[in-house]
Image (cartoon, rainbow, N blue to C red; front, side, top):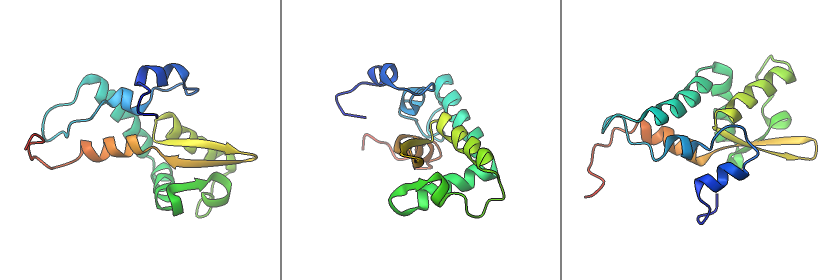
Length: 135
């Protein structure tokens, strides 16, 4: 998202039906530092529910570990799964709807990339760093 583009503008112009993770989560405070808000908890819950499925957890792992952090659904993400194409597409849609991945259609191929904001929010949420950020 462009730096001079605020979250509200992004949400109005987004083609997605789900809010941008940064709009839902804000800047997540580590749980070890202070409780998160109701809105943040709802956004995090969507992401954690999506990741709670072993297939989806493997898919996000494959996307993150792929060269360039981007993977083609049919070219790169079908190996190792005994699933139909429609089932695999469903799992990728759940990850997308939870705000964990972006998708980019290029001709007949769909590429998935983890959303840095979502990965950062999850990383921050479980951070055990209790250092004062003002120091």
